[in-house]
Length: 231
Image (cartoon, rainbow, N blue to C red; front, top):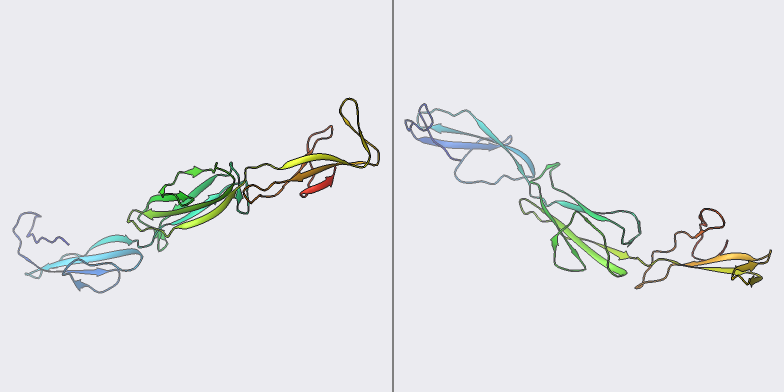
């Protein structure tokens, strides 16, 4: 506290000397102020203070409100579609959502969110990003810090980038012939089939979702599982 005793007008130098200054935090009793002090407990606090001079004049109580913020921000990694389990594609959009809260109240405020891909050096995170490297595992690490430099423990998420499309082959079960025009001719008892697979790439694949067929009409979702199915 910076204390000055004035008789009438601030700065006139006509007052006596200050006898003591007292303070109280929240609902505690007044304590003699001797040196700087620390306010304990996360959240909002009200500091009450007053001074008395040698003539017994007691100052009207003044207050100051402050928020103690000793907690680091909390950051969440948001993953958009398309995503299946931990599989993502080059069109999957990632973004970070960080908030700084002190005992249910707004904290000091967010200073920065930092991120790293595959154990690279940390840098300031972009607003959003997508992965565009080779197929395989990616380790995403991230953390945030607030304006008081309270720093979050590093979080991480493992994803697998799968940008290799499925493979679909057309086949026939039963009698067939190749017309001179190059078209395949099926017998009445034959079945046309699609053999669809999602090939492994760097040890992983997200799996087949759908196979489509066009027979003189708009494409139809066959709803097949991976493998050989009749059309």
